[in-house]
Length: 156
Image 1 (cartoon, one colour):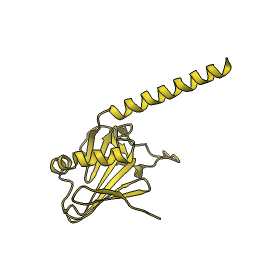
Image 2 (cartoon, rainbow, N blue to C red):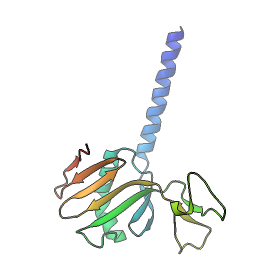
Image 3 (cartoon, rainbow, N blue to C red):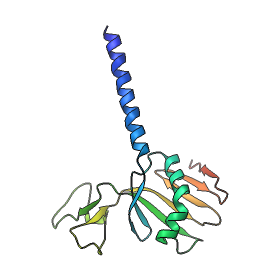
Image 4 (cartoon, rainbow, N blue to C red):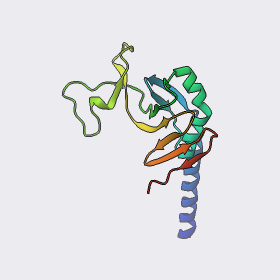
């Protein structure tokens, strides 16, 4: 009897986890803010494959709309998580082990106290559009050639 209850609980937990994962992966990715070569994204894909797929499907639109690449021979685009959104910069004397003023990007053009976004790096894209592009996610780097082939670089 106890085993049967434990199995039911395990199955229920697995179903709940699967539903949460499906819900998270189905939310649309949104560009919330752009500053220089930094994109702040809401609902960033969780997996490396998801991030690379999102970049490949949206890079032409992003490059054209936001003019992020000034020199196609060498560029860097940084993707950050929009996280908690626009926040008020901590006041004087504020200190935290986790965050400092330098951990925020502020938008001077926003005339509101809530005009800063916490910098939470997700991944970046660097390289030469006509040769190789490198996609760096966590401690992994992928190289992408102009034909669209993407491979994990062996960092060992």
